[in-house]
Image 1 (tube, rainbow, N blue to C red):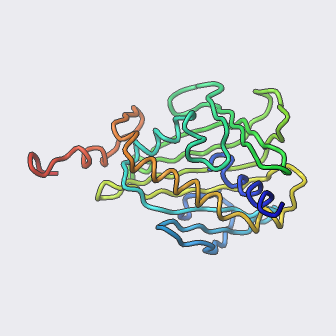
Image 2: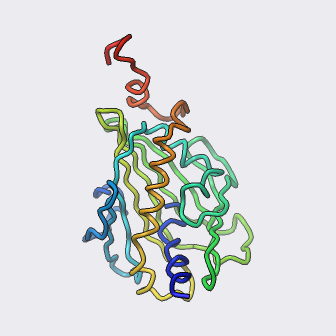
Image 3: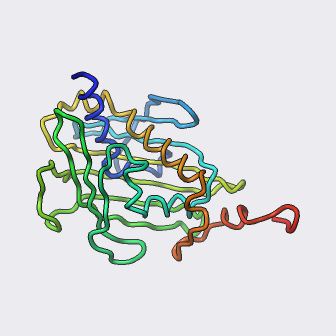
Length: 236
């Protein structure tokens, strides 16, 4: 039973699925403490004033360009392949290439009830650093509630910054109220494993090259030029 409960609680950090001072909520003070440094992935947690639940952030480098990583996250059908406990994710309403609403259902091991969420997703790229950022926040009223417990308070972010060698600095952030009877102390205690697994899976898929040739109109990606360069035929 202990193992089942642990696995069940881990999903809370990846439900919206799944850094530096930029990967957090502006105006909130964080004191980040490193909790895991493994396989090139670092996970930190911080208490949040006024909340029973800790925030979590992750940092890693992926040998993939920013477009391929963004394309992976935007491919909602791939969610079960990399986001911990994600059973289903789909676009509910598309406003533009950089703004849409998605529905996500998370299959949680017994005895914890499944969770789902309807979130607004917004993408943007910094014109100076070329960092691409995604922010996902819950919204109400778009989809009728299911048998799952609906997540209604959360902030989830991804940040992808291109590096000079064509790789990408990947940063994640999440602060989530799981909206249920699960004790806050247990959620906080087990806040590390889910983002680690999610980031590890993301990196593996991105580095495998499944999305390497994707193009997204709203992204300027210097890494694509580097990945397409051949030292035998041109200078980059």
